[in-house]
Image (cartoon, rainbow, N blue to C red; front, top):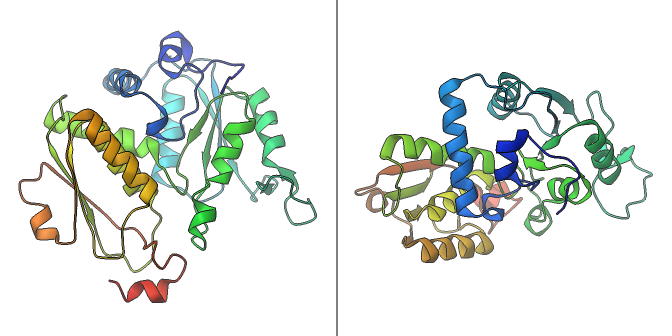
Length: 284
């Protein structure tokens, strides 16, 4: 995807190269490494001017606490400006279906909003949760991909149905700080944890993808019926093969956490009964 504007100054351009950041899988590991090194420098300095005279439109279709605050403060502490847009609350509701008849409660289409925001800002960040009704529809990530398709500046995913790449970057950066720069062969356990609601899968998906990308031995532990999406698992398996890590999927938590370097506890819903919480409860 080509973009007409640069983001975050010359040094950042060498890493970003005008690309959107929808998933860590869209980037080469070497570029992720460069981004993490830059993040380490910025974190130590706390304040910088790497985003001086740059702006980002933060588009929220759903509520946020940590992502909203951390993104906005990071931009402003780096000399930039963040503009927060809450869809349907102070801004028009946006349609995301291509070719939709605009006779409902949505006043504008994403393709128009993306082009307008591209003229105003240097980047667009989008947060859009799944509806948790139909997985085949949700996994299309129509909102964030719609912005990426029609925007003329880089689009950053602040969490969608499939991915939470910024969370994944923070996770892998923390693991490097705690375990050392080389994470190869370190045991990473993604452990399903109980929650009374059926939660989205973006965080566990991204955790499995980023840990496998860095050569960790990945164990995914969950009850039967809580398997991650097959396409995600294929990507995790491929990462492990490329980076020399191992992948194991088990249903027994006690065995899974033996000799683990990292235990990443997270709840997620069941694809087997997606959108049907009562049926899902039978699996817990």
